[in-house]
Image (tube, rainbow, N blue to C red; front, side):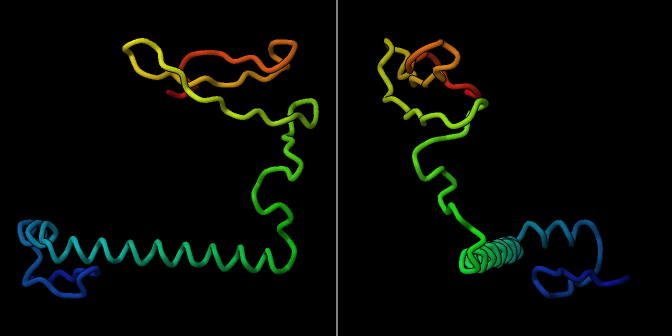
Length: 122
């Protein structure tokens, strides 16, 4: 009967049967090895991204590092428009807190209007 090789543990099991594989894969050492493998892989991916970002920044290919416009404006459908800060939450009875969210002035035809209720996606 052929032996089973576990890539994570770098070892051969005595034989290749479902019960032996199941026992091995449910073991603490195997789980630790799998966790370590993916943690190392994620660290390598993060380091590659950091290196690429650093190289692009040093070459001057990255102008706006923060991702936001430098003058506090954001692009709207009709051009630049001022950014609207989020307002604090207010208590609402016994049910807890509901956040207040800004509504773009273009929707209400004037200044900043606050709508009450849950944010989209909640």
